[in-house]
Length: 273
Image (cartoon, rainbow, N blue to C red; front, top):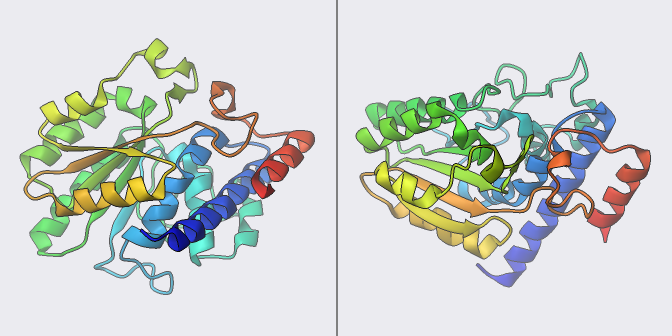
């Protein structure tokens, strides 16, 4: 990837992070930590990888992206707004009663949302079904699912992993946002789901490691996933929870709370620097 394009994606990701902060602050609730950690991943997906058209969000043969960690909806909404699915000003309506942007994604309300998600583990399972359907249809569409590292503690995730490997879903790619923290603290202290690489490999998956905040690394990872034949791929993306906002970085306390007015201003300063 040329440096000019990396710079363009970096600027888009900065705007995405600003949108996340704007949404959560105006709602006075939400999940900023895991949204900020996955901002670069979704920026790459929506601006480089996915075959999509904001002017035709329901195109039958489009690629699909499932936000399995549905509580990180601010990052999905901000990326969709920046990609042109709806005005960025609408991010300020996040979690309002009459808004299209609910606390968890709703495919019936929000253009660009491919799956209604919330209960952890269900999104990756739905992605498996979508990928198998594409195979049965003879379609070239690909399916991506972004999951959290804490989410991997759900048994349903590993049932989905077995299913995908059994049906050789090489059109399916999971992206695991490995920021090391969940609502109750460090994942290693809560249950300790690592090592992710050997576990997914044991389930028959193509395992790819990536830096979640390096666009060249993400490009190489998604290219490797696309080239894989006869088995699904998982990109294990090492990230920083709260990335881009100084006081949120690597702090489990920012998993699910909104900044106050002073913290909001500091976040804007961090992201505008």
